[in-house]
Image 1: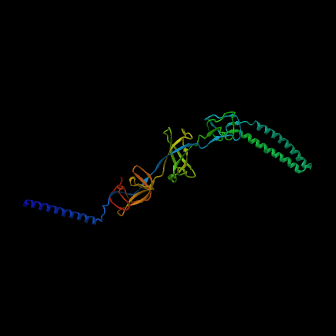
Image 2: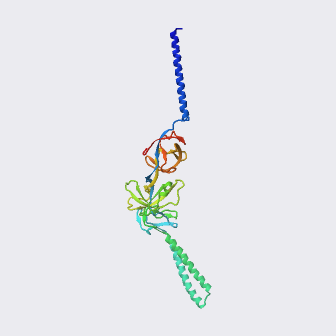
Image 3: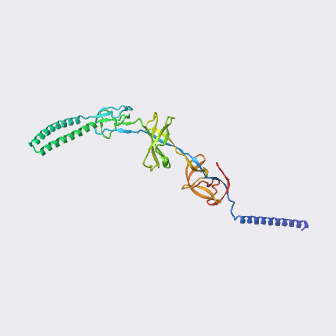
Length: 357
């Protein structure tokens, strides 16, 4: 083998030795760095938001129904045949106006019969009264005659009541509905002759979710609109239902319409708008800070260099922020970025504090 070849091989071995030593040194330096850092990855850098109080006013819109202050079906109190029907569909009638008259000739005959019997009994009572004063009859005989007079009077009162029940009158001033029967029809207390609704003092009924029940107060004003009209109406809350509906978890509220009621029809649909009193100490955080869970919601709060998982309860929200009702306090630092890569109690570094994320 020539000298040049030997030199070339020696050069190759020398260069390989230098490369091997260099790699070994680099690995030793990396091992020292990892040992110095405790074998952990660098803490992630995240953005955070300082929780402060803000003024928040909440408005909601719910469905409602226009209702009449007085509304009822008109039924006869006794069975009988209609001989006079005075139902003008859609007409306004006054309280006490005649709606219908049932056949009462048989009752009138019984009344006349009882009246004759009562007249005779009174005459007999007068004669017995005179006889009893002079000792012509015993007091017991006189008492029997007086009892008969009282019984006939009671029977006559019953007949008069039955006759009065054959006359059907409007219970209050209002608008009549459609006629359900005709003259000559035989009706019973279960039969509906027509309906009547009061045309003034209209109300609007609506339901609100359970969480708003504490914000509803008697005397509070609400605004509403109806289908087919852009006009706004005003009503004042007068009462609420005694309890929350279990199937819908909502509370029924009734409000009295104020001002002009033109255009309102009982049974009509209404869109009710409620404006609640503003909360001047509401805690608001960016919406992206909230992490939905299977049960509830959580946020990451930065404390002592770590990301702590905290349960929160939320309230109203707007386009970018959401109210936190419980779980946070003013001054807490909430993490708003890098949430998917975080784990509870993980080390984190704050990159910047954001105001309007």
